[in-house]
Length: 293
Image (spheres, one colour):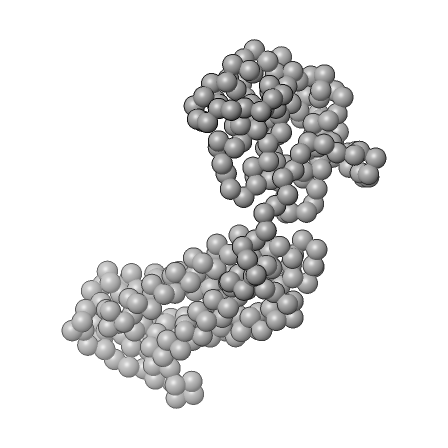
């Protein structure tokens, strides 16, 4: 989630910087250095986000760090929206022109110059643009602290891992219930949904989703429910397929057919597999568990 936000922000920053150069219009002249620094911090943080999101499950400090980054990202989005809106307003009023004349208002203290077309902006608009510059500076300082704090967690950069992320172990429906403690309430709640939605009064296909961060026991809960005696009594067929990171329709369909027939399939076309699955479940009440989606 955070990675998607950071990626979007980086794209907007790069796009805005490019427009400032090509259109010769610097709404907040002097902020170029701040934007460059902001981009650098975001890129450094983005490089370790994958590792951070994996570690947050067990490390509260990393989870708090990601939360701080999340809030800062929203602040950046708000400022970028203000900046984009100001540029659009200037464009509507005819201010974006290579031959436009500008008046420069300079603050000696921070050496930032704000330039605007004389015909388009008055003193009020000048202070509005100064406000954008101040916000960017404040956010940059916050992001600097966040980027520095990441070194406390020994986060690994995506490109520095010894090889590609190791393949996840394929899950199965098998489970030793004697080793599981404390999931009775959740299991019963899930069973209630499964058995109610599988009743004769219900028509069509019904989907129940178990969602949450990795490592909290979603697979275990699905195993407990699918192996319950009432579920086995209710459904004619119970199928289990591990989707994992790569969604391979052929592999999943083959796993489903083998679970239905109890034998290895030698079919090599998805269409043939689907036809065989359709024939095997026709007129039957079945439960399909897609794990690690």
